[in-house]
Amino acid sequence: MNVGVRVDRKLGHATIVCLVVVVGLVKSPFLALAIGLIACGQGLLTQGEAAAVGSRTTSAVVQSIFCVVVISTLFTFFFALLGI
Image 1 (spheres, rainbow, N blue to C red):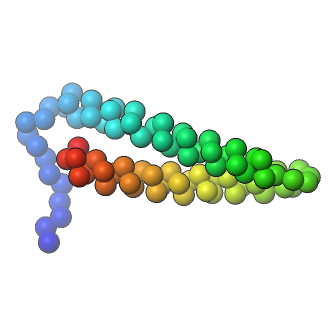
Image 2 (cartoon, rainbow, N blue to C red):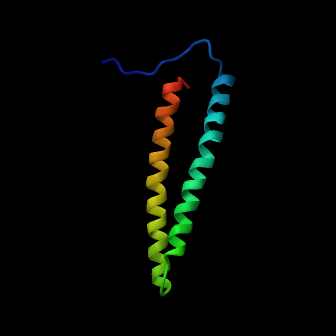
């Protein structure tokens, strides 16, 4: 199995930069939505003292990082199927 980096000599630097910007603009709203929903959900579940706020904040951050990794992975597979 030959796994390597393909370089298309026809694509110029400007084209590659444009593709990177487009991919970032497509992924960003989905990542923001996931982070916002997780943070709001954890905030609404908070009850009790200040320690509970810290605990929920930590939980929200961990869940958000996990979701960002998963969503980015899914987009990577999707864009790989499209050949981007």
